[in-house]
Length: 115
Image 1 (cartoon, rainbow, N blue to C red):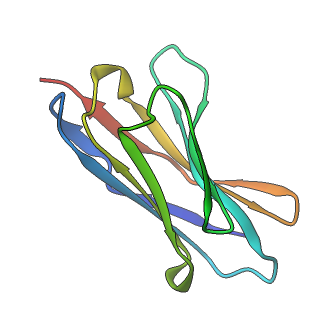
Image 2 (cartoon, rainbow, N blue to C red):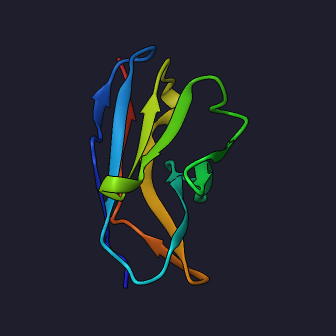
C-alpha cells in the first residue's frame, strides 16, 4: 500500500502563485509515475500534470507554461509549482501515484483563486 499526503493548498489572488507538495510512503514496488489531478466545482476530475521516472513530464493544455511539476526521489515527494493562477484553476487538487499497476490517490487539498 502507498500512502499519499498533500500539503500547500490555500487561497490566492488571480495572478498569484502557490506550491503544492505530495509525500509518498515507502513501497516495495517502484513508483513509476506521480502527478496531480484536480476537480473543480461542477466538473469531473481532470489531469493537471504527471511525471514519470522523475524525468518525463506531461501537462494539461490549460496549465502549460504556468505550472511546473518536479520530484525528489530521495524524499519520495512530488511538487507542483503553480504560477499566474486563474479563477478557473479553483479546484480540489489530488496527488496521484502509480505503482505495480495500481492507482493511488491522496485525500485532496483545496486551491481557491479569488480576489
